[in-house]
Length: 416
Ligand SMILES: Cc1cc2nc3c(=O)[nH]c(=O)nc-3n(C[C@H](O)[C@H](O)[C@H](O)COP(=O)(O)OP(=O)(O)OC[C@H]3O[C@@H](n4cnc5c(N)ncnc54)[C@H](O)[C@@H]3O)c2cc1C
Image (cartoon, rainbow, N blue to C red; front, side):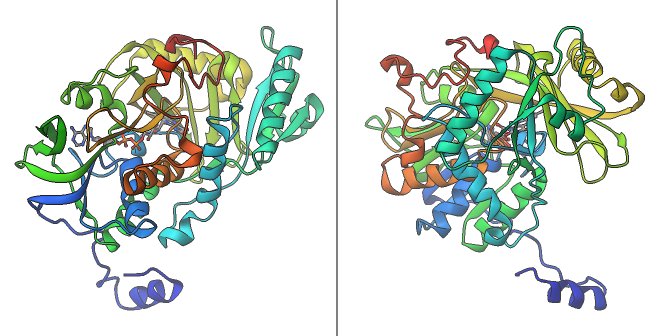
C-alpha cells in the first residue's frame, strides 16, 4: 500500500481501519538465492537495493530478534559525510546523496532533517586539520565551511567559548548533514524490501553455516536449515560471534556505546554539535529532547547496556562545553554494541569462503552509512565485484598494509 496525502485523508475519514501491516510475516522457505543475516539498517537496505536496483529475486533477511532491536534503533541518528581519506569520503558522500532522496525512494517519512553538523576546534593545529578535511570534502562533491569563533558564537551562544582546557577557536560546518528518525529508517527499508518480494523473517537466529567442499551453501537457524546460493552476513556488533561460526577471526572488537536523552525542551540546539576533545556530542530531537553521547565503554562486551562511570564522563564533558545542560533532567539512556574495526573503517567484501560475504566494522558511525552500505553490498552480491566507492573496504587490507586509517591513530581502537 502506497502512502500519500489522499490515503491519510481517506483513512482519517473512515476510522483508520484499513491500514495494512507494513510488512508480511512469512515462514522461512527451504532455500533462497540470497540470505541476508541480520535485519538491522544495513541488512534491510541491502535487501531493498538488491531487489529494487539490481533485480535480485528470492531474497530473505533473517533477524534473530525483531526489526529495529539492534543498533539501527539505538543510535543518535547523525548523518554526515565529513571524512578525509579516499577510501571513505566518496562512500559517505554517496550515502548523504542517497539520504537526500530516501523518503521518495522508500515512500516513507524517515524524518530526514538536514540541520547541519558543527565540529568544534580548539587549537590552531586542529583548525588546520579541519581546513584539510573541509577541502577533501569539497573535492568529493560534499559541502564544507570553516567557521571562525565569531560565527560560531552567533550560531551557538550557549557554548562555553573560554573553556579552561579547550577554548573554542573555530569549527567545521557541514550544512547538508543532519539527523533522521532511526526506527523509521528500519521500517521504511523493511516495508520497501517486502514490497519488492523480500521475505523478512524475525525471531530467526543464524546458529551456524552449512558448508560443502569449502563453500557456504546455506545457514543453520533456530527454525531449521535454510539453503542459499549466496549468504551475506550483516550483523554489526555480533560480527565476530557470527563469523566465528564459519571459522573466521575478524580484525574487530565489540564495545558498548551509550546514548542519552533529556526531557523535552524548547528548540535550543541548531543542529548537531561535536566536541571531540571532551568526548561529547549533542543534537535536539523534533520532540525537544537533547540527544547526546560520548565515548565508548572501554571494555569488550556484547551486552546492550553500559555502565555508570561513562554516564558521569559524558555528562561532565557536556557540562564543560555547554554548562546550561546541567539544568536539564536526563530522561533515559541505553547502550548498543559497536563492531569496532582496528583502523576505524568498515568492511564490505567477499570472504575467503565461496558464497559467503561480510559487511561490518561500522564502529560508532554506521547509521549514516546505511544507504551506501546497502547499495554497495547489494552491488557486490549481485555482480561479485566491489562498488567503486567501497573498493578499499576489503577484509585483507591489514595483511596488505592498506589500512583506511581516517584518524591517523594507528591500528588501535582505543585511540580512535
Ligand atoms: C548509542 C549509539 C549511538 C550511535 N550514534 C550514531 C550516529 O549518530 N551516527 C551514526 O552514523 N552511527 C551511529 N551509531 C552506530 C550505528 O548505529 C551502527 O553502526 C549501525 O546501526 C550498525 O548497522 P545495523 O543498523 O545494520 O546494525 P544492527 O541494527 O545492530 O543490525 C544487526 C542485526 O543483526 C542481528 N543479528 C545478530 N546476530 C544474528 C544472528 N546470529 N542471526 C540473525 N540475526 C542476527 C541483530 O539482532 C541486529 O538486529 C551509534 C550506535 C549506538 C549504539
